[in-house]
Image 1 (cartoon, rainbow, N blue to C red):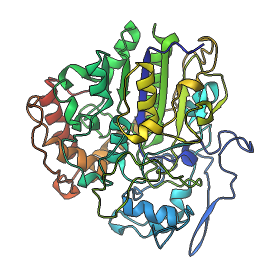
Image 2 (cartoon, rainbow, N blue to C red):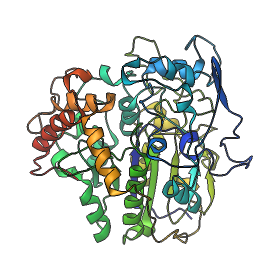
Image 3 (tube, rainbow, N blue to C red):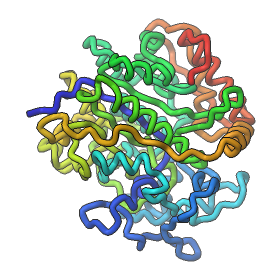
Image 4 (tube, rainbow, N blue to C red):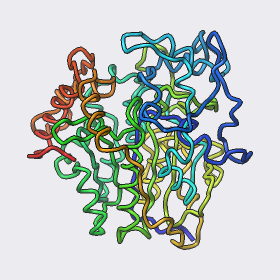
Length: 478
């Protein structure tokens, strides 16, 4: 009997690998693709994977500074110093090398910082939910490239051939799962904290003022049992001095504990909702962000024949593994969720287009958005309990730093130069219209240089002000 799923909720966080967050969830278990602690990279000396049992503020923000996440960076991380060459094996040997050789303007980089991992007791919310429900150890980013291409894969099944944030056209004109749902009368919403990256999709602009809502509205909708068919949640990308809010996206070097708090808020809202018995919650990350993972990404079905990048990359391989936790009362506790549960997947691993595949099957939408989501395994076959009997923990609680540390971190983060994601969002916000445009508006290119926004605070002001104007919001999202 198929699981009775009527609500799918996706929380997509930022820039952490599977090994970094969940590599030691089941230590010593050969059926789990975690760390054995024998993994290493060589850069002058051997840098093994490591953990500091004391979760200090510095360790919670490791690696610091931010690792490289461009397509060129990832080629070194995956293949070593020579980068991607034809028929070269994926060795996962260049993480320390790439990190050490990045520009030094942000300070000295310890090559071993990207080899760090957290233990389950240090990220207890994510770990508790992974054990109480299910964890995917074969979920890969859709492509070995930055945040925007991978998030567009989650929404459209393609990045239209682009690999780096600053090359992508704004608005992005790929057909999205949101517009497919809209066309079939299935309600959906994007819930966000400051500026949603998904608002850059051209085909949501006409419906965005009705469909994009602050995260506080997600809590309210869950409480009243009015969650839409599909909910996509975006974290807080910017520090906010006015409200004292800290980024909760877990993007290095943002403190992972605030992302833990967001995961707990989402789970607690869903678990206490009247919608619980009919809900599937997917917690995942857009890409690995330069953090080490030991599993080579396999070959992939190209989404289309578009190659709009100067590297000639045809999207015939996945990106690095990312954490993925699957929560539903239909998931047996302690599940290791593998694509083999879907007999139509033919050994294909999960990637972000599995979200699209699962949404399409749940709401009986027709054709795939791309060849990639057409080939992707669905999560529905993994919901194997005969009824909604796994209620999991009634609630989970995040371990937050002391208030004085939070205030200090907000001040430091707001005054720091923006990372690539923050700068790109601020630049892209300038391309949002003051009101929803006529379909087919001409595209333009974002200018995402960090120098345009000297601090996170200035980038946030630019991004949030334009977003609020476009959506008709009178107050800052929370």
